[in-house]
Image (cartoon, rainbow, N blue to C red):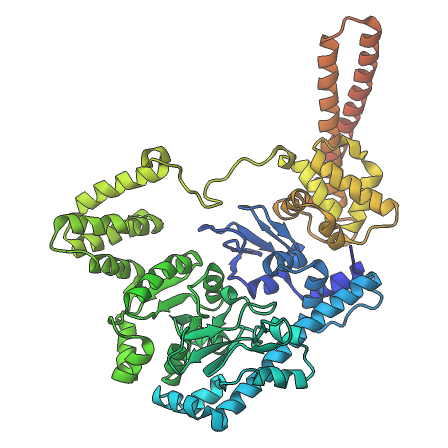
Length: 627
């Protein structure tokens, strides 16, 4: 496997603090010296994902994933190890390492991939210029009239760099070829489709107003095309590519992220590109939209990175309401306060602004509904609220929302609100809700298995992870301090480590040291399988290490660990010898077992004598400091 020198990896890690890199991707909350968050690798409501800057480690105690900043990018973005190193090096403007230990083939593959991704981005920029020119020229007359009829200002067109894809078979493809791009690259960019004959390609977008889609960092990754002649689909997006994953991108977030921070960390979430453009044109510059898809968990977490509150402003029709209901739990689970801007049946943000104006929309923002109130209204809109059974049905549909409220106090407030809305007595709602809660806890009464999202229900740790605290600390010391590693290897027979998992990690590191193959912690962590890496990161995060000071600050912790491991080993061997003695009547065998038992007893007394001596020495030192 290709590797970098430890010096280079340390330089890249130092320039990319793990809390900054992870904090750019998920919302972190300060927790003493560390940070915590809901894990990005599995669904959870209570944060169990921790980042420890002092040790450069992340660890989720729910799903078990852990590692350093390189492992995080590998897991989160699906990168290889070299790609994660290169990406972080580029983030910190660190040049590539001379003589990195790649084979010629690996160097060529990595260089090719990096160049390929850059060329895809360059294709998008070339296409952007083409679309903007096409809008300004004669072929763009119909598109300009469309935008004018939709009341899109020239300032908005320039700000969002809106363009036009002409009604041409392969005009863009021809241009891109002239610019030196190959057909396979043009197809890979998502801007073209392969011809049915198998040779060449043709333009994906024709006769559409084009909206550039930038990621939150400002890289042009895709386009959204709006038909202007009534053709279907109304909206057509760039196909997913190596630089564009629609579930992880939000339209206009690159423009809106700073205004969101300035406007009490509040974002307005819309469905369409034109909704966002018109809101921004009217001064609501904190508007964003999902890219032609239902909101995803990744997009909700992305919003949470920049906002604390999200105002859903979807279309007022039935489809928009149901889309809002699907978005609410995703946004709530991401840690956002969620409200809904109520629009009438045939309205969307664009049409509302044109009909009623900016002041009316500002008033609408003040009339926002809580997620609970919106869900009640949606449920009631489909029922006859003069019928008692129908009103009870609304209550039953709201029970999942009550359950997710968490605290009993908030639940009771919402139950009172539900009672006022449905005219069902609070006592009746409480009675039925209590039965509902009981069914959630006892799945058999619901007639099926309960679906549990990790880590709400945690299984016991596998036996290999049930190491003693001394073994965990020993492993943390070995991989945290180079001198401590050498000291432990010189003063402990690794066979004494009782648990096979920490023992195997120690053996592997010692053999690498002996054979001159040790390339530092980062390369070692990369070589571990999932079980070993999870154990190692758990040890690195969960046990207290000595504070760094001058001299051998680590020595006392190492000595304590070595003694504890030896003591456990000797006691274990004595217990096994005792069991064997009970099972034999052979005098010779018994004699041999007694000799071994005597030897281990001597070793155990030696460990205890060292402990007593050190305790006395510490007491004398404390007395001298007191005097």
